Every structure is written in structure tokens, then in C-alpha cells.
Length: 59
Image 1: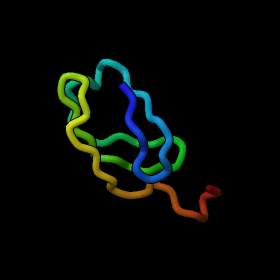
Image 2: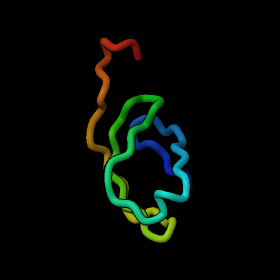
Image 3: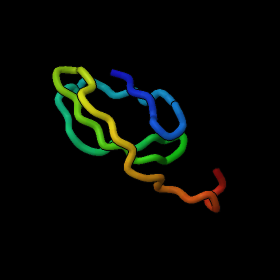
């Protein structure tokens, strides 16, 4: 399953263990923290929470 980061647009690949999942996912490209709700391998909701890395960290 793939979702796009709401911060940078990068594609985040999730394996089958996330087919029924509600919780946080981190984008490893920009360090954004997303709140996701997935049911039966379908995206029901994605919400941007925050960036976990500041601009001083070398982005």
C-alpha cells in the first residue's frame, strides 16, 4: 500500500501489516509525522501532525 506524504509529496510504502491500522506514520524523506486510518488496505483518512526534524537539522 502506498500513501503520499502531505508535507513533501514523497510516496510512503506500507506493507500488508498496515492493512487495518490507525496511528502514526513517519515520512523518512522529510520527517513529517502523519496520522493515518487504513481499513482493508484502503486509506480512510490522512492528517498531517508535525515535522519531527527542524530546519537546523540539515534538511
